[in-house]
Amino acid sequence: MQKTLDYICMQPTRQGQASYAHVNEIVSGMRRRGWEVRLVEPPHPRSGRADGLRRAVAAASTQLAYWARCGFRPARFVYIRSHFLTLPTALLARAAGSIVVQEVNGPAGDIYDAWPQLRPLARLLACVMHTQYRLADAIVVVTPGLEGHLRDRTGRRRGYHVIGNGADVDRFHPLGTAAVADSRPYVVFVGALASWQGIDTILGAVEAPEWPSAVDLVIAGDGKERERIEVATRANSRIRWLGTIPYAESPALVAGSLASLVPMADAPRSRYGLSPLKLFEAMACGVPVVASDLPGLGDTVRAHDCGLTFPAGDPGALARSVAQLAADPARAREMGSRGRDAAVVRYSWDARAGQTEQVLLDLAGRRSTGARPARRWGGLGLRRRASTCGRPPADG
Image (tube, rainbow, N blue to C red; front, top):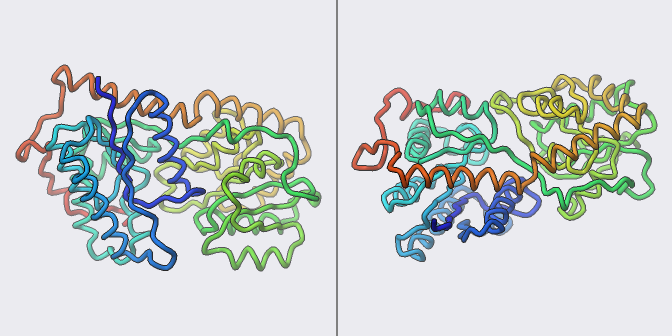
């Protein structure tokens, strides 16, 4: 079988972002398995030039260049990281006979986080996205909840595969020594400083009376909540904000901590389940996780007994969880060890690449035996569904 894959990503990625790790780790894993992979992505915009129009133009020109370069003969498999601007590529790839897979990382309403000016076009964009999903030979989602959401919104019942995020278990591994110079024992939060990350909760927790006096809170990252972090750092000597750190330094910072905090807020996106990189990277580092008890997130922690969960948005409960781990280092080490074992066996990026490959091989096998979804609308595999095409997403 011809193992050629065109991986289409219209979201510019940058090292240190979750999307960068996901895209490049899967591509690398496929290449290690003997696949010839062509990664198609637009260049990252220069600072201050990332407005919606320029991003749309970059996405369109990137797709045009791709089709010109391949002479309208795409790879046997076309794997699209879902984006509302990739409908032309999905149509052309299907028409060319490629096996098309859509990877969906969030509900349709997430479009408007990055493109708020598009809200008036919600009905049109819902139709565009649902058309792409119905075109695909298969859909890869990161959580079971997201699969259920797509089933309800698009009417498509089959062809879903759940493949969550993962961790580079060679880069993220146990160290056993603190990575913050001259630091007392600390718990760490690494990630975007955004409200949905639970910044309110961690800042409230470190001020709570239950927080252990001998433990610091180390924060690494940047974002909209930066000013609040700076103010809190000046007011409380237990808080240390490192700003944005190089991706290469993140593993040591996490591995040297008492625990890694994943305090996600109970936001609308949480209802579809969570699969954050920081969860699996902390597990790979062999440190316990203190996580919000939300779908996907709390389930994973409990399944492997690799940390503690607390009600999302409850600073006191988060502080008590940190105190429990600080008071029982042996238990914390055992949790960290179980998390490391689970990360290596089940949640490594290499394991995720293997799952992705199996999806493609299964699709190729069904194609070769003639088992393929019925084609309608001129052979493009679409179905008219007035109840879904044109209806905006419930969260959008």
